[in-house]
Length: 124
Image (cartoon, rainbow, N blue to C red):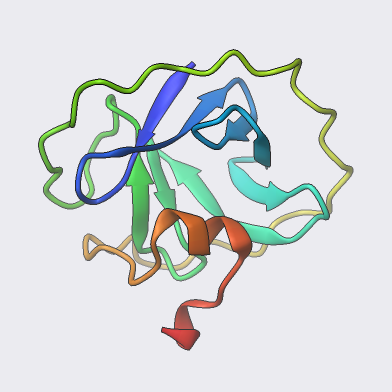
């Protein structure tokens, strides 16, 4: 399991293969074609070079091995990976929208929970 960190360096979730889990081990989203989707098929953003990006290309979270992107905070210790059930089957989804032309290095106004709920960036 790969830890997912927010802009403050706190573990906000975990990735196992193509499944995104919350800290308690509940599946929240899945990855298809480097895009993140909810289990009801809603497009959330992208996973690129270890960065979870909102639909406008702003980083929301990252994995420890992420490259590029904004300055990363110090990683907060102490998070323990949950023991989740087997990965749920992803839904069939169409192709994701095209990526933004520019990958932003400015952190998204969305926090991880709002990102996973699909809150539009414009509503911030």
